Length: 274
Image (cartoon, rainbow, N blue to C red; front, top):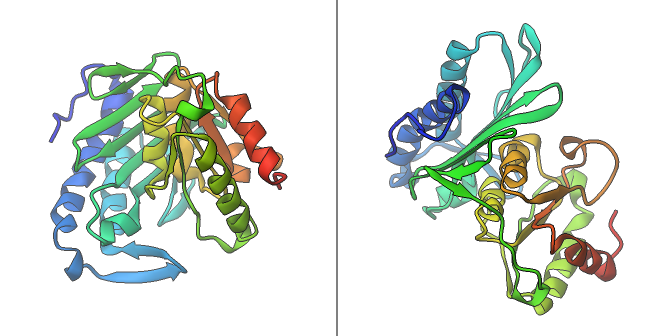
């Protein structure tokens, strides 16, 4: 496991990274014993395990200790208002829960810090691959100690894209649309991947591994940290549907600047966006 100090990060990033790494110890222990986990069903295809709750509790305690006045928005525990109304931690203690429960080594912890409704900093930690992605506004994006940037591929046929299907009744109408768009783009690109962890998908765009990512119905904790990582890596992020913020619409396209218009054109061509 990485040291709890990220040399390329500020004190703020180190606080976030330390909390993520501490919570990851339990996830790593549980990962190879998934058959023994206590699992409950939150909804169709959307599971929560005891591991989620344990990790979230550790992250909450660590961050609350360091910044006691900040508020929280957490996947499992919901919103906890803070005395400081301008700062809010946005936490997904286990993004890729279904992967985790099937012993697929692709999941992460995601922590974003919001300031006046704008993401100020983000940390995403993949404990299995020992990769920590982090970014702070105006300071660039990093994976471990290495600066990362979005890809420079200009042609759609060379692009590798990613998407994810969200099991959510409120966005059920987009399921067929997403399938059609994925099939359409799959014929015109180098391929489409669906790995099941949106936070890592966004990190992979920031690192140039994916050339773009699009999805609907995501929650704030799915995208908070990833948003700033893509932007600080020189990427472009836009909403695909609706009015309001990313957190209100849950729709997102992240890519390099050269591909953004080409991807949007293909998405619109296949089926009008809702």
